[in-house]
Amino acid sequence: MDRLTSTNAVPAWDRFARWPPLAARLALGALALLLVLAALTPLSASMDGTASEVPEFSVVPADDSTPAAVPERDEDLAFYDRVIERVAGGENYYDFVVAEQRSRDYPVRPGIAVRLPTLAYIHAWLGKPGMIALAVLLLAATIWAWWQRLGEEPGGQRVRILGTALMAMGGALGLNHYFFVLHELWAGMLIALAFGLHRPGKWRAALLAAALALAIREHALPFAGLMGAMAAWRRDWRETAAWAALVAVFFAAMAWHLALVAPQVSPADPASPPWLVLRGLGGWLGNVVLSSNLRFLPHEVAGPIVVLMLAGWAGWRSSAGTTGTLLYGGYALAFMLAGRANNYYWGAVVAPAMFIGLAFVPMALRSLWRSAFTPAAQNRPTP
Image 1 (cartoon, rainbow, N blue to C red):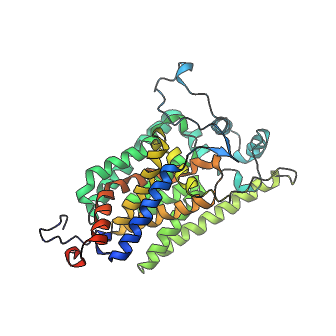
Image 2 (image 1 turned 180 degrees about the horizontal axis):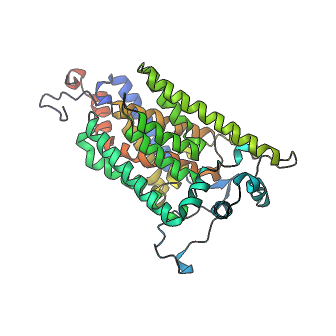
Image 3 (image 1 turned 90 degrees about the horizontal axis):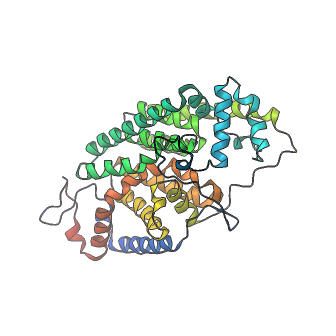
């Protein structure tokens, strides 16, 4: 049932409508505090308090032959360009990547600082026109997957158009060919696709999309782990085994990757600065805002929007809503604890589908308020 009845009964997919008053008041207080803190938290890519340039995630004209129309290439993007160029020229990735990285004063210790080769080879094989076509197809497939899932999930039908539009908004950055070399951009879109494709009992297509995301960037691993844990919670042992097998294959592939990198790494090579730096709320908000189209908004607006995204997911009582809450809440905690300020682009791993949570914000806020200040008898859920 997708509408409130005349007797103020609420549908079963409205999570906060069934909360006791004390819990709802505490949640409202915590949400209000987070919104204020998010508005006050400055968002910038900086290291040790010193500002550093943030690459412009702006739309680049299709005809980029005019030098004035093309932003100056960021050093990281230029490095990936060079790697792709050498792979396209027939060189083996592992024959040169460590030396190339070292020559630019990028750390190569530990070996995980060297990216997996998957995206470089895809770029080399497809070329720029092929990558543009792939980006369009991936975004279209992700939008379609979420149109389908919102139409099937309890409570999703009523926000289907808005939710799908928000998915398109969150994924639109993936069409900016200037940033096609960023691993997180592709991994994030593949995670959004896998999430949209997944259904309890129907998981094979989602598993394939997640496997591709893992092959590009190891930051997709928490998604695979979460899907396996939720399958185990449902006692779907076949799906649990499938996700466990994917994780095992990933670790085997990563071990192979590190083994190929290790012989070229010298003890004299400087180690990467630590990633566990406890950036707090700014780490989470900065990662999501700066690696999405929210970056065009003032931080006083963009930060609270990210908090509201998570609140919207939490208010949706469904398989997708529970998954989204755990997924985006888990990454939020991870970004608060790990990642330096210049790693803000990690947020692209979760940003695309996170936008869908905004479609459920009105319901979540209304239900929290009613649960907090309306007698429980008036908030009884419908069967």
